[in-house]
Length: 146
Image (cartoon, rainbow, N blue to C red; front, side, top):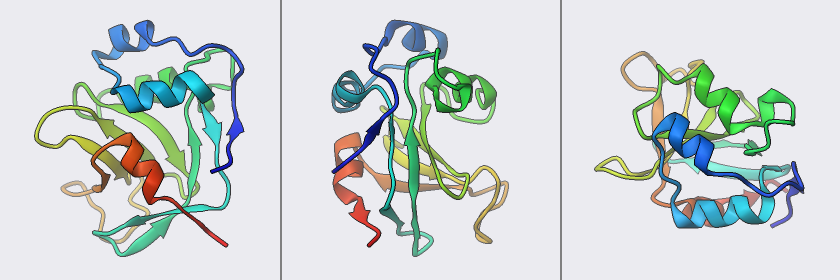
């Protein structure tokens, strides 16, 4: 897979872990240590519950010197009241949805979070759709759009 890296700075985890009561899973932490945020083009991920393909846009960075729309801290402060405790918005999609990571518990996994109700199936009762059990599984389920 080819990514456009967002930041050359070393990823910093402690502040986000403390601010959002979040524990980074090792596979995601390893990815951030290597890339510290990426922009992705020409990839698709299947949302099986919706029978729809969505296009990932960015996986957010820990580098707060970047544009705020590219950072983990910004989006998680913005949506802190809307997402479950101990979870983190780690990316976005080209249609405006978010990639939600829940690293523990019975709902452990990565989800497509349709906060703006882009899909007609989404409403106040159901707007979060399972994508993969782990971050590595999420990367493995991506396919090229071409």
